[in-house]
Structures are given as structure tokens and as C-alpha cells.
Length: 371
Image 1 (cartoon, one colour):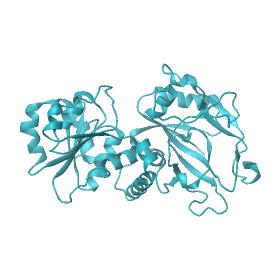
Image 2 (cartoon, one colour; image 1 turned 90 degrees about the vertical axis):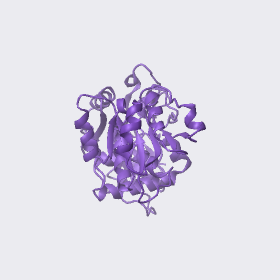
Image 3 (cartoon, helix red, strand yellow; image 1 turned 90 degrees about the horizontal axis):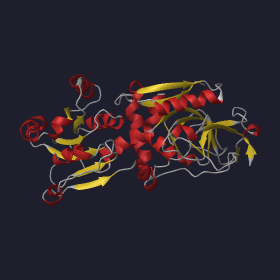
Image 4 (tube, helix red, strand yellow; image 1 turned 30 degrees about the horizontal axis):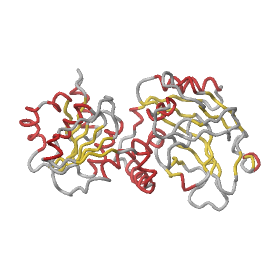
């Protein structure tokens, strides 16, 4: 094993990463620290990259809390006193060095990790297999840094479960219509000629939010949770929205509780309810009649497990999304995120404070290194 400095002049002698050795359910930020270390690597088999941007996702915080089902293995490889892991699961990197015989990647490529638990909250990273990286050249930082979770989730939810018919009046219904995944779902579905009924929370500016979701993000129709749960609305108004010969074949649930049962009721016979989140922290409750008389199927979707089982599907989804973004068919999430810029020369404490503030702040947070 050799130090990077001996074979790649553009790679620093030391890396610094945000690490943790323990967990805290009460305060996830309390377990974080910035650690500097001199990495070792086999230059014949490793890709070296610098971090361009990474989001702070709910799953990252859940890992720090110790409640997420998937966790990175803690190790002493970083020279820490106690076994530690680098925080973060998603991000975009610029390749600085590749093995001599590597043909799929080159210096300057933008890449994202194929698998979770790679430790992305770091200024540089080592990837031991080029096949564990996906190229995302041509995207902006915010899109590239978040396409591997929200983008892939949305794409697979739409395309991997239903054999949609072309030219028909086919619909999917989803709750949490203002979420990052839902906004991509409506766009991906529209491109595929699939209509979307998006449910959002009741609010004072409902009409304004609904118009944005329909005009900017391609939702066919946006309704409120009150309308979603209103049986009269479902019988009298909804049919006029859906139109003649409508088939509501898929329901996407990331809320749970009453909202999940209400969107399930809108499905046709032998349709599918896919649950990929539970923002209400309420159980998914489904009427017995939907199973017995309508043949409802209810499944769960977890992008991490989906990739573990069938990694090529994630690669295919990212490749498809990259082309859609580059072609201007999908809207960048830049305007939907809060950007936290970090100067690479910032102190360890400054870097740590940016991440802690991101964890404790509302909205989708993205950290961007100003190289």
C-alpha cells in the first residue's frame, strides 16, 4: 500500500472526514467530529476523488441516531482511537486519479457511489472499484449530488412495477406531493405519458402551491388531503378529474395513516400500493375490502435494498435520468434546496458547524465545496 502523495501530485497528503464512533437518538450532531488522516491505497486498483457536494438526507441523520436499518461498518482504518465510520451516503465526486488500466473512468469525470454507506461527508474519498461508481457528467452540482437517492427512487417507483399501456388514460396517485421524490415522480411520469394525481397537505396558499406543482413539475392534478379523505369528493368530483376510461394503477405512499388508505381507495382492481416512506409516523392502514374485493397488493420500496439486490437497475435509472436532465426534460432541484458553501481551507470547526447547522435546519440541505 502506498501513500497518495507518491503517485498523484494533485491528491493531498491528508484527507479530512466527518466521522462518528457512537450514536445518539437525542442529538445526532453530538456524535460527529472532524478527523484528519493519511490514507493508504493501492494505486493499481483504486479511484481517488474529491468531494464536490453532498446532501444531508433523513437517512444520514437516522444512521447517526442509530435507528436506520442500514449502517456502515465502523473501522480503525482511519487511525482513530475507537472504530469509526464516515458519515453520509450520497454525494458527487470529481475523479482525481484512476488505476493505469482503468478504461471506464478518466480524471475529471463526475461520479456518484453505486452503493450506500460509502461515507460521503469528506473532502476526498477512495473508491476501491471503479465499477462501484456511476458517471454523471453534464449535470449541475445539486442534481448530481442528489440523483442517486431521490432521482432513482422516483424513477424506479414509476417504471419498475407497472407495465404501463401506451396511449391510455392511465394514472398514478401519490401523497406528499411537495416532496423531492414526488416532484420527480410527476415529471418522469409525464414524460412517459402517465397522469399523476398528487395529494398535498391543506394550507392557506394551496392554489399557489398546486399551480407550481402542475405547471413547473408536471403534476396532472393536485388535490388536498381533505379532498383525498372526502368520500363525496371521491364519488362525484374525482371521476370528472380522471376522465373517461381512467385506470388508476399505482399508488405511491410516503405518509401512512389515513392518507395511505385514502389513496389506496382510488386504485382500480388488482392495483398496487407502494410504500417508500412514513412521514406521519402512523401505520399504513388498509381496509379489508380492498384486499378481498379489489385484489389490492401492498408492497414496500427501499432504494438501498433495491440497489443491493439489483445494482444494475440503479445504474440504468441514473443513466436514464442523466439524459433526461441534460435534455432539459427534468427540472434541477437547485431551487428546492438550501446550499451551504464550504471553503476547502475552512477550519475543522467551521466545516463541522456547517454540517451541524444543516442537520438542525429545515428544508433540503446540500453542502458544496468551493474548490
